[in-house]
Image 1: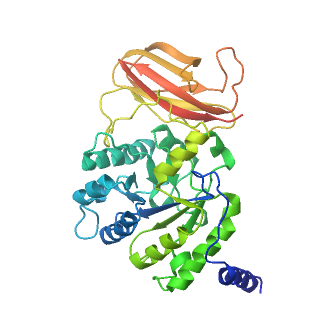
Image 2: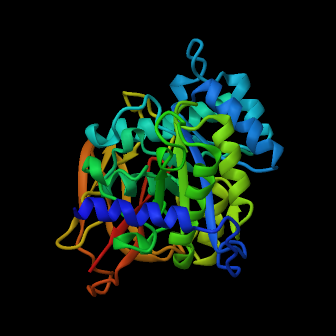
Image 3: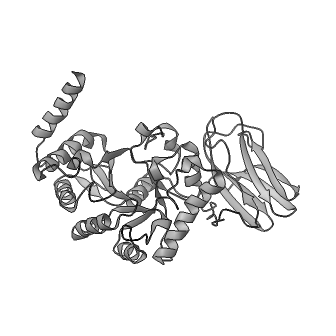
Length: 380
């Protein structure tokens, strides 16, 4: 009975929702709601069809594709497709290097998946101004550690896919610890079938009414909404046309994920510290360079965080904790170290022995002429 009443309420709202709802301008580029659209896995037919619909309206969406899936026979976008889409203003984002679940691999593999995916996309697009900064977690698999590592490598936004039902955390903008970081997940993700029905079975009138009801429910919350799909079976070109046309009747800002994320971060003073360096793609066997590992736990709330590093040869090593301006919070280590794997610990105290406030910090390794920096979230 409760389920029936809930369904009846939603159905009633859909039927009664006016077709031309107008809301006052809001915080999203002077609009009440921000809408982004994203695709997963790089299906060729779907992305090219959606691109035509968006281009005709001078709009952009985000294409998440594993870098090793480019040029897969018949079904996936080709390198030429990606370059053309990129040149037309569509965002190309990381979906991992091989689409492996990021929660089920070790840290070396995790860095390879994240950094390797971007290096592959950069090589494909052949644009020196392209920077791979958004990620759609493959199979939605993510946890706090994966999120922190992605952020430390320079990603600025993540699309989780509304995956809490699959057992992964569904931390959202303005919730949990992610109010303190420039990496976040979209606060609301709408599964395509809600708007188009399974297999695009909804009529134009029903799809338009669904768009109206979605806006009626979310506009008072100044929401950022993402709609994502895989193939034309999820949203065909006709239904995408109806959705975009109906959104155009409302106080809605439609842009790709990177654009909306940058707008949000600029408005909240969130940025990427210049001290965070690009991490070279190591391959499965890291090369003969000093390697700064990933702090664990990260984020950390109690006790201490372990910071691993490895030395290919003996040498002087300095490990520091820095604030976001690059100021030295504490020097954890300055001494000659042998070749091999090492760890150093940080207990959340500064050089005076005082506990630091909760927030985002940097940990930096300098050794053998190499400097590497990652981020660490310390929570009191």
